[in-house]
Length: 168
Image (cartoon, rainbow, N blue to C red; front, side, top):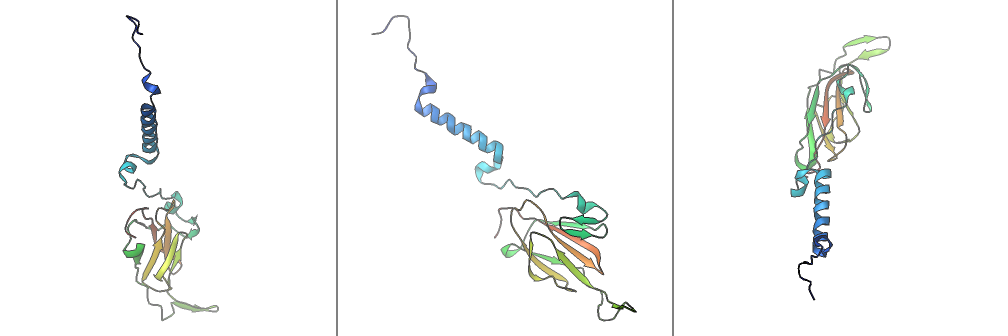
């Protein structure tokens, strides 16, 4: 029996379908705030980590390698087939004839690479080899490094990072 002048209202927020909708909305907002707007459509929102300041210094230890002096940095964020990154150059100086000789023996020109954490040699990368192919784990939280030394002095530094999504 209804009373006149008094309307009965049902609490909208207590309805089960409304509560489920509010929970779903809350989860969607939380996901967007954590993963960013691209996460909702399946896009990768990962970006390369910042380059550590020690790589820009004039020398010293950095991320497991030792830099004798400042060196030019090349950042590489794309890979070839199978996630392999091919690093070329510099061409080695002649290394058949000695540069100088003394009581301790003779010195020769040489080219070598220091492979830092996060990079795995696939091919090349040996002493006096011009090419070096490495594989890097995708989506790492740090740059992988390959330092090229010519006659024990840094010639070039490759910093490698691959997005978690991309060609495998």
